[in-house]
Image (cartoon, rainbow, N blue to C red):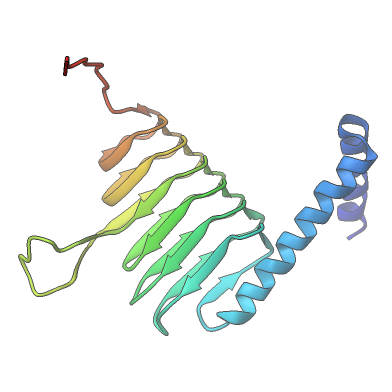
Length: 201
């Protein structure tokens, strides 16, 4: 316990020197409020959420809309502003330790989504483990699949990750990519883009 307190004090002193005392206090108050919001969400969905200490910043929300929904959040997960995490039906969402989820991200889970430890997710990322059954191949309303994101993955801004996707450890997903299928570990994934100009007048 003393070692943890010493580390906290050392970190605060270092932050104060770099940012200034005022901004360090404001930033850490924001973190404290985020942790409080996280615990309020955990109380609201006490049957669904299993977690350690994590932070849920302003206007972000976690919703569980089924008694079967399961949400497992690891230590020191940080979810920034305006993120929406929704788990429905028999969905299982696993977010491992020290995952960072940036502003305006959407995670929609009705089957299974897993995010490995130390993964960083940039703003405006959308992760879905299902599609709407618009072709009506079956009587089911949704077509479900699994999304597995490995450890130490970097997901760039405005990425869309679709069902039946596995992203290996240490992979980097380039900004604006649409991902479906397997992404090997230790690779950079990007959708090829070609500029084209069509004369209309």
